[in-house]
Image (cartoon, rainbow, N blue to C red; front, top):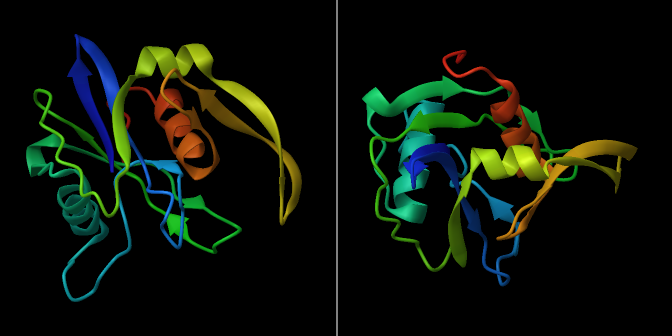
Length: 160
């Protein structure tokens, strides 16, 4: 879930850092989210909302829903992420689940635009260029950078 809130009057996104002891995605910077569970979720929007509450204690309402960005495929894991986007009313209190969130920060869209650069990456599928964001809080790369890059290139109001 890409959460957008006006922090100090600047549109910002909530990013989390996964704990270094996790079996998967250890230490990675991400947006809140997780895997679809057919016993709990009726839709991928439900998955995004449930995982956001579980990981950072923020309940997103239907009125805050903007839609989805394009799917992001991760070759290393075989996962496909469908990023949900919400525009929050106010800045909610973040209550991180310590088992899933080691740290968190609101990063302004202005900072992301300012620091965005392209980096040459070696992967299982070869060598290619992809966006990264060396922010003052953390270096954002990989799938999260691809998601944020989509967000920055989509005109506000142009949501699926």
